[in-house]
Length: 257
Ligand code: NDP
Image 1 (cartoon, helix red, strand yellow):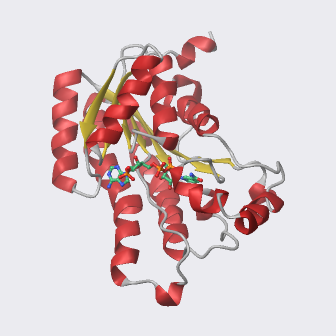
Image 2 (image 1 turned 90 degrees about the vertical axis):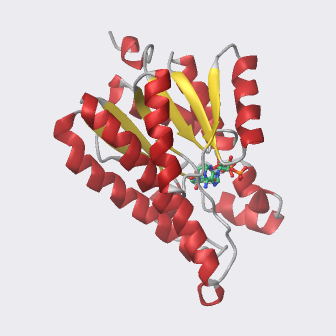
């Protein structure tokens, strides 16, 4: 009875920024559970690489180009994918950028707007478009990738824009969850610690930065993409049927201190 709740056979799933890193791990986890997965990435080549990785693991997936900052393109993708592939019951809003390391007083307008555009606006455009289709069917699950940076201020790198964008993603998650809870659509988020992906390479390759990150983490290590994908799979599945509006920390204990 319990393991069956993780069975996603017959469900469509879209993972934004799914061509690599955490998104690719999410795509793999959802495909393994039986979902028809669509990898949507801004770089067609990256999406195709992700599709090839899944094929290597024995899972068919679609790869599509999608820039989450373009609300018209997002709307069109939601219509097209739901029509062509059948119901998209799962949306993982994973696309995100960090651009860490700029002091607040030096942040250029374009820098601030760019980070908010991908991390916050992109999450909203996708939730709105795919969520509308889910609401019309009366079922669906949205999982947003937030961050522990939505709770704490990272040290020592400066990234006010990123932290603010992720705090906003968390509260957007709760707001959508409350609006949609009695209409069959759940909205939750995962808040990861540092995960070993291209996004954190700047810190992993800087011994001093990396030392501080590890010192501040009770588990004394960074995470792997699959450790976030496991939480996403849980939240997307019926195993989390009573959960909506939750922001699940997967942070190696970072926020305990
Ligand atoms: P990566 O940079 O490895 O992957 C992000 C993917 O999103 C890339 O394929 C990227 O494409 C794509 N992307 C960027 N902009 C857009 C866009 N406008 N439309 C569609 N796709 C886009 O990052 P991670 O896997 O590390 O991060 C995934 C998510 O997890 C992000 O939301 C991030 O903020 C969050 N997160 C990551 C943590 C970490 O330590 N890694 C910690 C906490 C949260 P491109 O190839 O062009 O860059």
